[in-house]
Amino acid sequence: MPIEGFDYKAFANDLASQAIEILKQPDSNAVPDSITDADKKNITDTVRKFCFMSGEALSNDPQLKFTAEQAILVTQFIGEWTFHKSIDLIKGKVPVQYRNNILQVIASNIFSTTKLAIIKNMPQDTLISLVEEKVNAVYSAELQKIVNKGEMSNKQFEQAVSMSNLNDLVQKTEDQEKLKQAQLPESENKTPVDKKVLKLAALAIVLKRLNKDKVDEILNGLDKTDVQHVINYMKMSDIENKIDHKVIIKSLEEIRRIIPQPQKVNVGMVLKRHRKLIKSAPVDLLSKIALKEREYVQDFILDLKFPAEEVFTPMVIQALAKCIEDKLNDN
Image 1 (cartoon, rainbow, N blue to C red):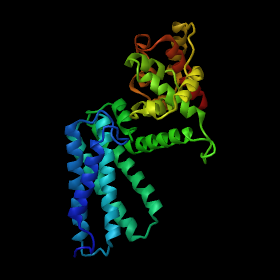
Image 2: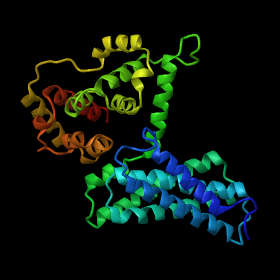
Image 3: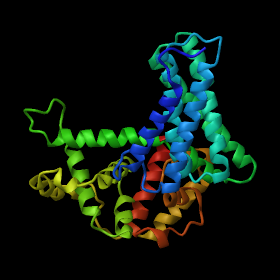
Image 4: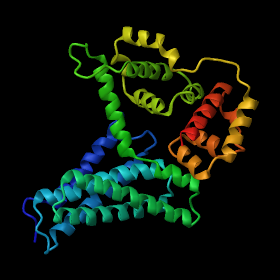
């Protein structure tokens, strides 16, 4: 029996249209630059198909007594998570032939988990957390199956499983809000101004004008958390005109506290100490530390034969080695 007020066909098309609009925006927080036009079409087609299928199943289930709002909630969960995990699969470089099946398994689990939770009258906040946990567990399990088939390495698995477009979106949005707050006059600002936000934004403006090698060199010397904020600011359109130029100049004057200062580094001694430390450290702990690092940094942590001197400057090698040593000591 159809659910009164729930037109699943129209709703599936509406969610797909929303996905299209987000994917079309050149500076969208939710879409990384690596997503191609073919990827975008596949994402929107998959969102439409899965939402249509779930909406149809809900409407045709004679045992259910769902309201339109409950049916919309189930379908929207599937649409939003299909969107985000589609991007994670692409960014994580999961083999193309497995992507649609993984998304289907995720959508099926969201459907059954959400439907049962609603029947049990679970609070919506709890339901949101439950669905996220389920999605992450299923995503990891499906990737592990590919590893077991020998079609993904453990390193590729770690990279793919660490992807979270949803978390990236949240962080980018938070960065935008922090930057907006940091520019308000103190009399209008209801939250403490984080001066570091302005420094990182100013640094991003400078880095946008440098070549990739130089940018990577500077970013590799920063704290990992700061790196992601700087990258987010670099991707903001017209950021140069969003900050008062006097503020930019003042922030750049203080930027030396963020960028490591030039110094003589005995690379041989640093690498010898680093490799000795890596060799004696537990593999699972090294993997945990490397999990969310960029590719070359992961190699620096996990591969004793990694040619660090060909990839990083002496100063960056020293900074990375110190950072890794600190993290090992913390554990």
